[in-house]
Amino acid sequence: MLKASWIIWSIVTAFWMILLISGAGFLWLRDVDGTGAVQTPEIKLLSIGVWIAFLMIPFVLQILWLLINIVATQKQK
Image (cartoon, rainbow, N blue to C red; front, side, top):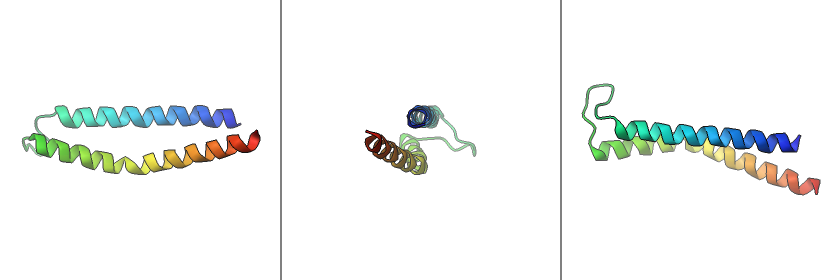
């Protein structure tokens, strides 16, 4: 059971990392947003900052899950 939790944690972490990198890449590489406004480097950085702030919720949940896995592993030993 615990080994499965570690495997699932790794898969979910990889998913979130891929989502973060691909989303940030998309936001950085686009020249015009959905409303037609031209994206300056400052606006691109702001957009990426908002994207990272949004992904802080799953990041915190992943850290909690990691701590639970570590504690459970220590209890089994």
